[in-house]
Image 1 (cartoon, rainbow, N blue to C red):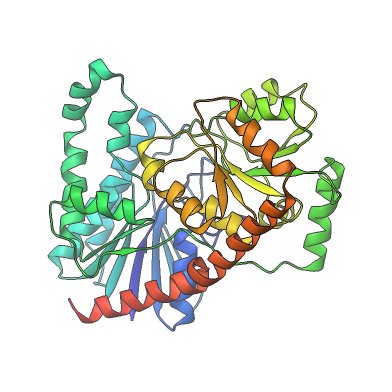
Image 2: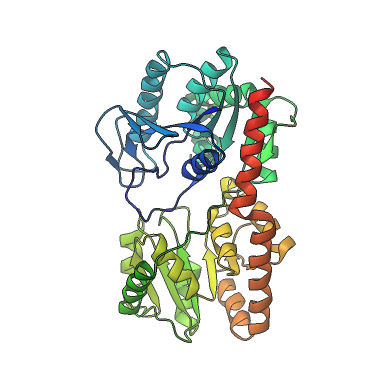
Length: 412
């Protein structure tokens, strides 16, 4: 079976090693393992490095069963910018040109956002009677409106009206919708203007457990030892991810000032330099910068807890991000400020604890309780590991997703 995957803004197989595989790579690998041929469509512009991979259109036969097609676009320097919106428009325009010379696949999987590329491919697939799932990971364009000051919201709705129309069409045209949580799926169905279908599904944003070599592990451990993130009795809380405005680290800083806990914050992004300045005199906050997959693995293994200090926005209330699954994979309880779907996960499966983001000292109180109760941490850790193994493991999630795509191709 020939399957297309459109997924921009993620690492792909040709990028430097050490990046965390996300939906594009994980699904491609699962499909290839089942003997399918995959064409992975992505942008020539790398969302993470903010650099073009080749500087133009490129087709790469990565392996016998995997072809990568890169579409040119303008690029951008900031996640939130007019330049990014323009980049997506140009990307969609170039994708549309490229599609005119293509033979149809048996089935397709469309990553959303960007809105414009999803709409272009969805329209082409519908016209050619090809079944497809649309995989929703962000509530665009709703989050655009949420970021606009209240007096300008009505004007923003007019400006972004084309994006709302495209979103609704993509969802309505889809053979099925894939979303990272049940709350997100319900939101998508409401936005689609169509009834729920049997092909609609929840697809957690989980990843496989990578096996690293002894040399890789030793190198990562030596790096962390040099930063005083040692394999000792230190009580440690970790965060690993892109440092941007989605997070509020004020409660973390307050907790670090009051508790004998080491906080390890790994990652780079728009707020990285500001955090370095804020935490310069706080010795028990370790800002280690960008780390690869093996170093992330070692940080988790040397930590007691993981933390997700998200701002409690609509997008994250609907979502369960990869950070929760990564923590469960490593058997680490997750401490989070989120309500909604993540709160449901934490409470229903008892895999972590919640704190009130609006009370800057509430995280301190939660962590203080855990410091005094090792049995509670052990129970939460065991629950996390078992929940991942029995429900959310990459093998379970992607085996089911591949099976659904196979069924989809037979029921166009």
